[in-house]
Length: 257
Figure 1: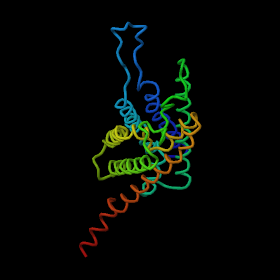
Figure 2 (figure 1 turned 120 degrees about the vertical axis):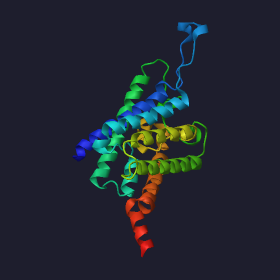
Figure 3 (figure 1 turned 180 degrees about the horizontal axis):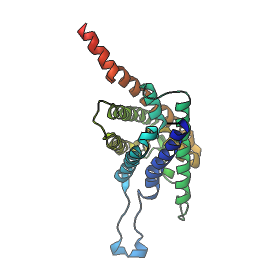
Figure 4 (figure 1 turned 90 degrees about the horizontal axis):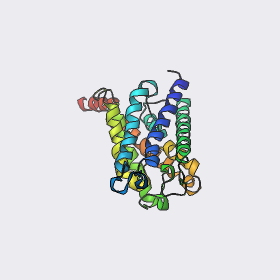
């Protein structure tokens, strides 16, 4: 498959991830019925909350994995691309660079669309507690968690995310269930870490909203590039060294000698 074709698929897929995940957080997470319009006694909350946003992120990966997995591999995430490269499942050079550029552009485009939709409602401001579902630490962490805590959280969760991706897509694993496995893994990751960092495990997903929010949020994006990529590379190295078919075959040969 030509690189340009795969990059277009990554652009579309990453746009869907950010639109579905961050869009649900911005537009639907805390939505409530308007009591003034429908009557005080019939007002009820419609917000999807933390669980709904977590599911939204997982569903974006699940649906896109089925839609473009056979085209680009459905990375949707620079950390995933780096992790697969470290595991020797993906070529470096122009392929790696092309994927990352496409993913970042897709995240920016989707973030711009979310901003455009959100500003259609009076009162929306980027100065709120969670503007465009941006990631952050310290004062910009939903739960006020420190830089070190957020760093460790993102490294560890991205490590496990890549271990799941590598295992689920291994040719020895059960076939055709990888999208479900990976989608639910991302859902679980969000259930754990939304209160900590608002959940990144994806540098492109972090950069897109931050560009529109600016200020300190944009200044903190470095952590959400360094930590996920570090966790992903560690997982890729470990899987290829210990759990890959080649590593296990080599160990078996040594035991028979």
